[in-house]
Each structure stands twice: as C-alpha cells, then as structure tokens.
Amino acid sequence: MSILTPTAGRQAIYRVNPVAKLAAAGIISVALVLSIDWASASVALALEAVLFLFAGLTPRQFFLRTAPIWIAAPLGAVTILLYGQASGRSHFTFLLVNVTDGSIELAIATLLRVLAIGLPAVVLFVTVDPTDLADGLAQVLRLPSRFVLGALAGLRLVALFLEDWRSLELARRARGVGDRGKLKRFAGQAFALLVLSIRRGSKLATAMEARGFGASNKRSWARESRLGARDLVLVLAASAIAGAAVTVSVATGNWNFIAGR
Image 1 (tube, one colour):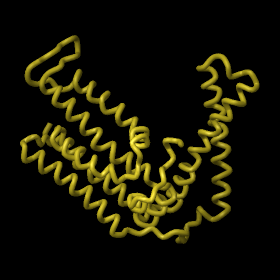
Image 2 (cartoon, one colour):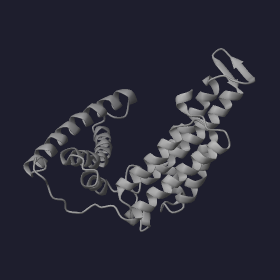
Image 3 (tube, one colour):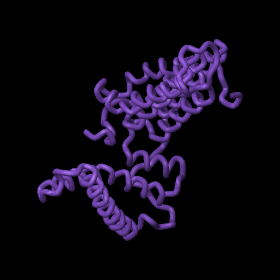
Image 4 (cartoon, one colour):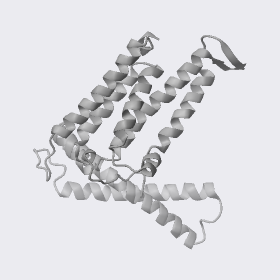
C-alpha cells in the first residue's frame, strides 16, 4: 500500500467531514505555533496520543505514515541545540556550535512541538478520501469548483505516476539501458516521466473541459457534503486540546509568545 493512499476503516473518524479535520488540525497548529515552550507541546502531545487510539490505524500503519515526522523532529531539534539562541550556562562550544541551557530547552520544545503539530495532521490526512475532501472544499467552504476538481484530478494521478515510474524503469532495463549510470538513468527517467505527465495532463484537461467541468454556471454534486455532530465533536476536541495546552503553559509560567522574542 502506498503511503499516499488513504486507509479505509469503519471507525467514526472515517465518516467525519474532511473540512472538520482540516479545522481541527488548524486549531491545534495555531495554538502551538504561538509559543515556543515544552509545556504546551507536551500537554497537546499527551492528549493527542489518547485520540490516536481511535484513528483506526494499526501501530505499523501509524509509524509508517508518520515516519517523516519522526525523522524531521529530531533533526530540527539537533539544529536548534547546536545553533539556537545562547542563554544560561554553556556546556559545549566549538566554532559556531554553542550548546547552552537555553538552546537545550529550545531544542526540547522544538522536538515536542513538531511532533504535536505534525502527527495529528498526518493521522487526520490519511483518513481522508480525496473525493470527500473535494466535496467538502467546494460545498462547505465554497471554493471554486474548477480549482477543486482540477486539484482532485491531479491528486488522483499521483498513484499513476508512481506506476509509470516503475514501468519506465522496467522498460529501460529490458532494452539494456538501465543497468549502469544511476544518475544518468534517473535523469533520463525523470525527463521521460515529465513528458508523459504533460501529455496525460493535457488529455485529461481536454476531456474534463469536454464534459463540462469548466462551466461557469453553478454545478451539481453527486454526493452532498455537510457538517454534522461528529464534525462538531472533533472540532471541540481539538479546541479542548489547544485550550488545555495554552492554559497549562501559562499557569506554569512557560508561555513564550513568539511575538515577544
């Protein structure tokens, strides 16, 4: 199963409107971006961990889908640790590297904040069907239908591009031109895929225009997208997580508003 392919399940999260999922992820992200401190991120991450149990993902699916976050968070923390703002006692100094009490605290806060923002966003995204997302964006948020349908068509082609890449690789190897020179082979395949994608995109655009997808009048939709009780519950849960994180941070004196830095 491709990491780009959404999972399917019977849990309630799969029946939540994608617009509500975007709103929930946005609420948590905004709350955590306002301050660089370990307290708010820790509280948010702990509360999110409870909700992850109801996401309908197996442990293997969860760690495979969120692997980029687990890689990016430590890398970002190490960068802040070595080159972050120096304050307090210095523990290690070498050229531009200066590890201090302040950089250690900022590194921990960065690690937790990236996890607290990235993990729920990825988990919510993998439970979203692209067609449901397009319906929600067009019907609930009232975005232009041409933009929404074009983006949906492009997203649907991602899986085909992956298959095209594998087919090109096998075809080149069958002709004896893909066994040597990895860089040259990659450049050739990338150019061939670019040409193929342009041709396919042009044909798809022509076909969609011929079927009336580009009409300027108000269009109808095969499936109605609306917000309901499940969507409200998810948004309220995200608001509660954001509120609890900010409250604990302020109450413990760790709130570090970014505008004041």
